[in-house]
Length: 222
Image (cartoon, rainbow, N blue to C red):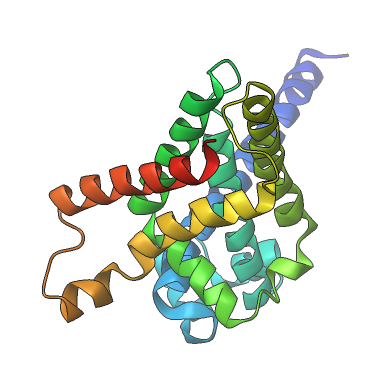
């Protein structure tokens, strides 16, 4: 093989690597912008033209990556669920005593949802659609199995240790934790207006976080 042929062979993988990197970056940029748009305007109110105008790509490239607007919306849903489950996986609560582990999980859920309003809004929007798009995604179902497995193992440890009361369903426990933390974000605007108080203030948020932890712990502990 000649020197020029060797150089060409070396350059081809490098170019392919750059193309892959650029495609991944383009797809991620589209997802980030689309997340904001769908969270703000919903599925019906969002426009691909607007998303394309805000990204470093084109309408044609959006269709190339995601097929159509519904495909992009579903990819956004998968992305936001993947993010919360990925962060959740870093908690490393297996080595903690059951009470401390459950408290940490509740605190994490509150903190994550409190600081990720787009996630809350997207879940609310998907409920307006009766979960139709979530139902299409095996990826979302598989992602959410992990949190139930985590809670089930934690709960079983607590029951075995004699600190958690028996007979609770891990899915129901996940529901209760999620409901309390979710409502903190989903309804704070209306509560603030109706009751003339800033539900998002630091003082109110900390007090509500502590109260939610206490409520769930009282429910689970023997």
